[in-house]
Amino acid sequence: MRLALIRRQFSATGGAELYLQRLLSALVNAGHEVHLYAEGWQGQAEGVTFHAVKAGGSRSERALRFAEAVKAMLEAERFDSVLSLERTLKQDVYRAGDGLHRVWLERRRQFAPWWKRPFIGRGGFHRQMMALEARTFDPANTKRVIVNSEMVRHEIVRHFPAFPQDRVHLVRNGVEVARFQKADRKASRARFGLHEQDFVLAFVGSGWERKGLPWLLRYMEGQQHDPGLKLLVTTRDRIRGAVPPNVILTGPLSDVEAVYAAADLLTFLPIYEPCSNVVSEALAAGIPAITTVMNGAAEWIDPGVNGHVLDDPRDLASLGMFINHWRVHRQHPVPTREPLDLDTNVRNTIAVLERAAR
Image (cartoon, rainbow, N blue to C red):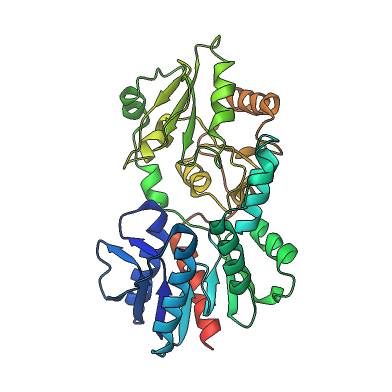
């Protein structure tokens, strides 16, 4: 097939782009002619033809300008199938990896202080994103949609009921399983100044508000009487306020697998995540995960078997109860019901592209 893929910013080394990099390689290796449309390019993707999309504009205009520019470029070409990883105007398959912008705004209002709620989502950027999102989910503009969780599928049903549900396909995220199983636990603990008897929680991710780190820090502040409980935080975010002494900041790491090797439990409490990779990374590393119902990756979790799911990230009492469960019932590795590997993800994505082409 002659295929076009759309992504505004592309990096061959960025963690968020690993899915796209693997997909590009798999498509090329399968003999397809692959074209990538993006504003920026970093690194190399052998065998892929890159098309620079010139968009520009202010923050509120940029997404729409990119969508309009790439649509005009594609109209001058002929492809068997077009896969967009962005909210764009015309494609055969749209991968809703970022979830729904309007649901993200709902969650922000739900968890923001009362005085902030009336102002959330009122800017030009948010209005443009929701308008563009509505055009993306118009069945005249998109043949098929890939979601990475049932949570996002239900959100599409709620907000875009006109889109046919038999054209929405679940393809769960995948990770490099072997990578997260190779780090040495003893060496990783020594690197972060941890003792073998410590029970270590891990938080991995950037996005202070969205990923729930403030509540986790508040929990640890109340646990300073417990010398055996530690929290490793791996983030690019600037931490606001004082950091409790039982919290270790690693800064951003290229070998985040060392954090999972050192940890006993992932604690990740987002207010909105379509399907966070950190949960599947932790499970691949063999440790359980605590997350929230607002994370599509909660669908990986069997409570008490490989983690727990919080109804509300502010519920620190339940968080403490779940943490104590795993302190008592340490298990490594924990089981998972479904395959975590990237190859399964790529194979299922290609199947949807072929179906759209037919």
